[in-house]
Length: 211
Image (tube, rainbow, N blue to C red; front, side, top):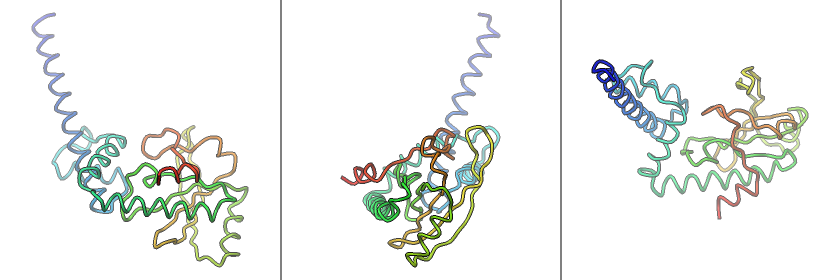
């Protein structure tokens, strides 16, 4: 290998290593922002972190997966018993909500399932029925106050789908229901973190997390 080629390779390796270190710094700061500033939008947290550190947003933004890993590390280091107790509370609340909504085959998803939830997190559930009206009638029959929203999600084929949301309160916690057609039980929607099929848990699986 020529001296010129060696010099170029060493420069590239050093640049790559510095870039990786910078990405990890941004990921760590983004994780701290998510954990302490109630910012649950990963892209917004990464952008703010890069600006605070003073690095290029184009070059140094870590992946959502890297931020999620950094968030888990941060919570394990600094969350202590408060984080554990809050997560237990949210999972117990999820069990109660899933029991109430048993006819709609609820599945727990998101931060309450993966352990990165904080005191501001919603309990996110996927529920399944032929029409969102079935869920609405359920709440009307029970006399339970609720709100309706909608969210656009990116599907596996890169198309966008509008997902009906229903929000209600239980144990001073917001429960967010994403309403899907029963066929979606066979294929989990893409994760907003990494685009892979979203991790979901049944009622019995959530109960096992509490043992």
